[in-house]
Image 1 (cartoon, rainbow, N blue to C red):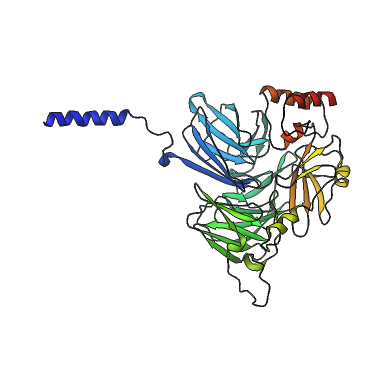
Image 2 (image 1 turned 90 degrees about the vertical axis):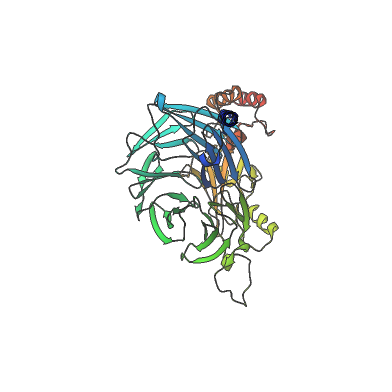
Length: 470
């Protein structure tokens, strides 16, 4: 009997060990989270598999399987970067997944390694990776795998992060740098503490609760806020900073640093993002949308004053690019009406995705401004981090409309200008033909530029039209 029992137990043990274990066991998975002006990105990765979610006004989810175990992840404006360390071949495999178009691409970096303390980030067209052999240096690669530059710093690189609407920040030692005109330039002013992430285009927050503002080449430490050191993003609406602390989201006045309101959630919040009208709070695997009026105010309200329904009854100015915010009167129609004040009889203005398309090639900055209606705003054209005051506007340049209460940032699409030069030439045609055969890829505002027929898709008709225009 004992012998029979032993045989049965051995069979059970053999069967259990022979079964394959799940490739996505929760205890082995890691989750990366970050935020920019398009939403909160949560990427849970385990082995060769990654589950990707962008939480915004419209949540988008996808999954990716690659050929090597994923070492680390970063994301920016719909682009997901997966880094895989292939130690046997002494190389790093970089996979690029475009969430909006469901395209997976990649390249290999030879003679490279990834260590646990390596920092990296990405922007619209470049991946920045700390050099594993020299921690004072950053290597910049294009999305096609070309080495674009090497940037050396006096001190060890402690952090790299993408800007809220564009650009790259680097912390070397305790000094903050930003990329400008092909060089990393140091900010004067206060030292900064890492980890660091942007809350909007002018506000940075460290993982330890330090709040900084950046303006005209200077960084200033403003105040400290409550933190449990687990948050990975913050957001700004108007003059209010929203920051998660455990199960609580706190609201702070950016001028005074005073905590003015809070919202209690049912679970741990890691990231927050504003879609213009509300705050999207994200945990490890779920999100909830919270109106500003849902926050409990910590300020004493004047009984004779009018209650606007906002946290602290404040006016709101939006610095978060693609998001928009009106005075919170509880009237959604009025909020939407505020965003419709930027119009054009010449171009197509998309106030949902913040694109301006239908721009003719060789349109000058002055002509573009003349063809836009933006009463109450100032308008500046930006190419990267630089203001463009003359010459032609080009695809992927941004138009920033600024008033006393709102800021709106639109990406530009010049018809047929796929390379961003502001005109149409053989390079644009070649890029489009490469796209058609699958040897090149682009998305977002470039798809609008490539849609020469203006029928909402990019196909051989656009190739024919673009060829006839050159």
